[in-house]
Length: 237
Image (cartoon, rainbow, N blue to C red; front, side, top):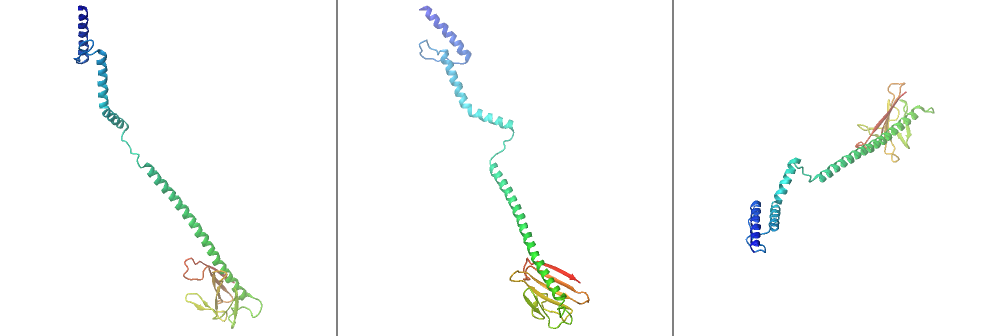
């Protein structure tokens, strides 16, 4: 009995010494071994206490960790809206390319249309010159239809018979047609409905023996047409 009591006092002294060293206060309760908590139970309690403190401080630790990472990596650049910005830039680039292609195509269409209009005006002027040369240089009598001595002369060009005063030539100001019996003859050729073009032809015999034939061709006969093109051919012989 004395031996057991001595053993209990020795264990109690050692336990108190360990508890004082580790910073624990003995638990006063009834246990099989006496009025103190075993070393295993105290160690378990210490672990539980440490875990509870870690859980309580976990948000603060995470905040400090993120703050330290942000400071080490420099200022954080926001990435929100990058996709929208990229889409806007891509759309703007595609729009600019489309407008450039459309502008080039439009210019090509205008140039091709202008070439066609110029060709019509040139053909009209060439037809007027050929008509004047035929009626001035014909070898059969009575000679030139534009001669100063010609009286009541008439010509036929482009399916129309033209004589003095038979038509109004659209000059500025307008004047009546004149075929022969004057130093300058003038007439008008309208190629409609086969073509929208027309021509104004003058035959000048002011300085004989020289003759000057001038034909002004138009792709459109309306004076107010914004796309009207004029081409002229002049022949001196």
